Every structure is written in C-alpha cells, then in structure tokens.
Image 1 (cartoon, helix red, strand yellow):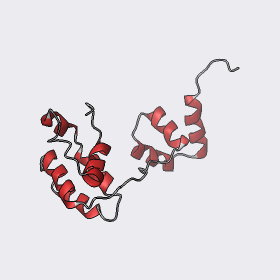
Image 2 (spheres, rainbow, N blue to C red):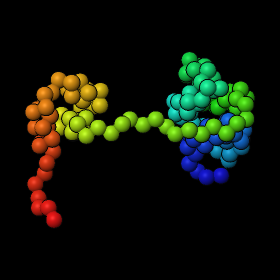
Image 3 (cartoon, rainbow, N blue to C red):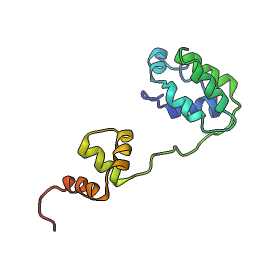
Length: 134
C-alpha cells in the first residue's frame, strides 16, 4: 500500500471497493490522520444517493475520522461514483484586483463592482512589468 492516501482514495474505498483502508494498513493512526472529512463529505455531496449521508457527517463533524469512514463504508451501496469537481471560473479582472490589492476573491468581487472601467484599466496597468518582448 502506498504511503500517501488521498481523500479520493477514501471516497473510492467507501463507495466502490468497500476496502477498509485504515484498519488494513500497517499504521492505522497515520492513515486515519490522512483522512480529510471535509473533502470526503464534499465528494459525496455531489451524488443524489449520498448527499444525505454527507449531510449527516457534516452535522457530526465531532466524530473521529475512522468513525466517519466506517459509516460511509457501511451505509453506502457499492457503486462507482466519479464526477468532475466544480472549479471557480477564471476571471482576469478578479485575478488582477487580487494581485494589486492583496485581497481574497470575495473582497476582489466587491472591488470589481465598485471600480469603473478606467480604474480597472489602471489596475491592469499596475501588473505590467517592464522588459523587452521578442
């Protein structure tokens, strides 16, 4: 078994292979630390038949990682579950505002609403670095 287990390995083990990754390993404590409940719950929230189970685990975030993983193994029907993860759309204006003002994406969206087109052009100009182009 490989040393680094990803949250996606836990999702696959709990839903498709039903393999007990934690207790079948040589070092169960180390493997349990690699379990990331947030990511696993988010992965199961993408499917109609597992969204309620993910909600239950979100409400019971105080449980140990092993208990959450064992719940998924026991409660979910064996099925291959795979989907693409939703990613934020790329926006050059938001990226420029984040770089210039050193703020997070949420604040950059507020700035974008407040900035005029001329001010936004100024923000983009501040990102231009000198040098020669070939």
